View 1 (cartoon, rainbow, N blue to C red):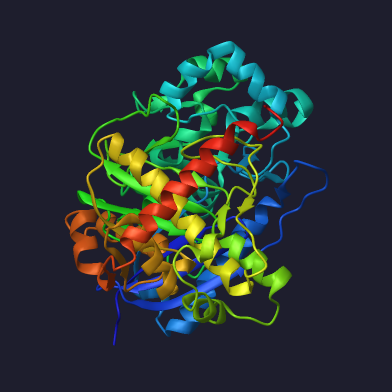
View 2 (cartoon, rainbow, N blue to C red):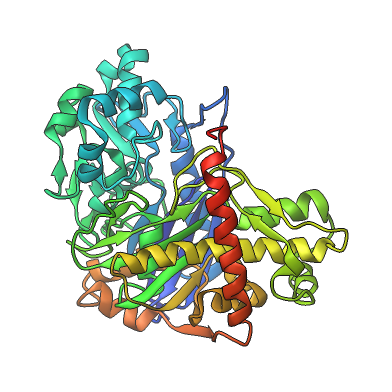
Length: 494
């Protein structure tokens, strides 16, 4: 018996996940292939580019074995994941050097040169990105040109990781526009590469992949090393957070997604181009053509709880943390944390910001710290929700994704701090599901991604705000007071 299914590939920072879904969005099989990034010097983060392909093959094979589904039953595939990791290939498609991972910050001087040339305001309106950073591909290409000129001269194509996988699967050099805003050489207003930036970097548009909208077919799979049969359609997909938004049906009005994984990220969809002119939040492209999202994020969230567990509570599980923290009153008996342990991005950008604990007493035990960490992330979440509302987002429900969505206590804290319902979808792999949904629409099995999402996404849990809303309103005010007081002082600024 044939079981038609759709493959979603999610290319993460430290691993690739492959998930097979049936036509109702139920998970049939999952595979995860991890890799270790190389950091040969401070600010340099690389990976053997071909490792991405080997891990892709491994993850797909795992998913097929777990599902018991025959490869011939894969109707379509979609590929999403990280942005900004850059791969340079020669005319035959072979990588010329190791991939420069998005975390790499070696191109700081080049980022400053680009900003001096174009001005921060022009770059913001070109890309939607609030800052000119060394991790953006434009900075990396300029560094590559000046530090590895022989390889620069041999480069035929500049690709993101997803583009490299697209080429390995289909033989075509193509990308999704939804991966491009933070490249800093794509104009979100014109939907095309920016000629002035390309000239400054010393590259040509022909050295970049074809631009496609989310859900467009990149092409059929060719015969390759993967188990995906030749002829299987492969769909373009935007960055992971936007795919997660689609995979949890948050593209509809009034619902935004929040993902508490290692980091915190919110995704609010808008039907037309919108900038936060105060440059607190970046603009990205949405999951359907000519739509946009505002995407505030923070570098640390769930990793704070993991760090605390690993360093100060070895032997405790996250469930243990939940049970212990649930016995502590809201507000953690006056213990307030600022969760900026790796800097702050949204709604206030300060790379020098650091974590703070305020109100510590001898009465505070391990359970208080666990709850205070959860509360600090909820306060940061509300800070960003308030900014989104100020920019016109209608928010009546939060859809929670990521590892923290498995914590009933954390979900309730968020609902109480936000005074909004928090919902969780049945599928725990919303990002991969979003990519699979785009594949399902691209192969013609559904008339649109929205129609596919309507059938393939279901809500499993709804948490309503409870009796702690008034107490958390007081706690959030204290958090804001502390944050406002200390944020300008980080980095020795005052």
